[in-house]
Length: 314
Image 1 (cartoon, helix red, strand yellow):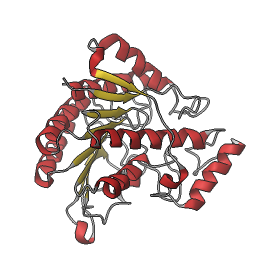
Image 2 (cartoon, helix red, strand yellow; image 1 turned 90 degrees about the vertical axis):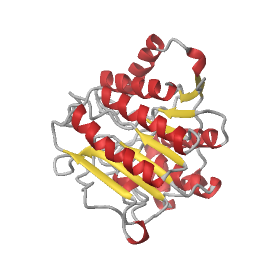
Image 3 (cartoon, helix red, strand yellow; image 1 turned 60 degrees about the horizontal axis):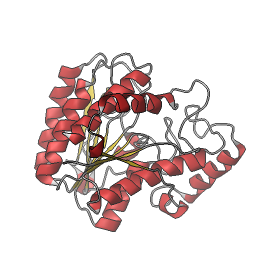
């Protein structure tokens, strides 16, 4: 029986922005309600308590100047960490450290075979750059996890798959010249959506040419267009034979998300997860970690993440 470890967020330092910000706790709350209703075999799921990361681990990717900036903003609790998308609040430093710490703990558990698979719903902060916040993302747990996997476990071929409607620029460009990090990113065309990046002619640089795959979709694209794009992701995976898969399964591509213009149903997440799950067992001993990413319609998020969890349990 597959055992999936899933992080449940009951920390007082919740990664949730205040007031009517699109990224707030209702996303996760709706998912937990649906999970309790739909998952009948509770023995196949292990709830894991979130943990904080130490500051020195943040420095694997982020600059000390930026980390110190976030700490000060967290103490004061006002202003913005970027140009207006990512507001500071008291405790945001600790909240962001819980995101990174939980993703890293999940990675450790997979590599040590403590779990078949891991799902961290609050992970997947793919816009944060080394020296700045961006797009609701404070610290880039994905980038830190990639570096940790290479440094600690000597993983040589990491496949990062991102199906969030927004291009994962904070991962894509920070590893653009790294031949050990293979990235496949399906997203809404950057000409119409933040962050305005992720074009199909970007395939990596130097020794990493051919290790990056951008698959932009036109606004209004639905499940069929997504599945056609995902076939290219599967081909890419079989060519590179990864040792680890990190899957950012943002749910903001579903129809009626308030920030995007795609028209998926939760079937897209079912399709992608089942195929990546199968690939993980065929190529990398089942090592796959899913990270929740974006999604700003709470009902959509709950449905999409349920399909991710079911796909990992299949």
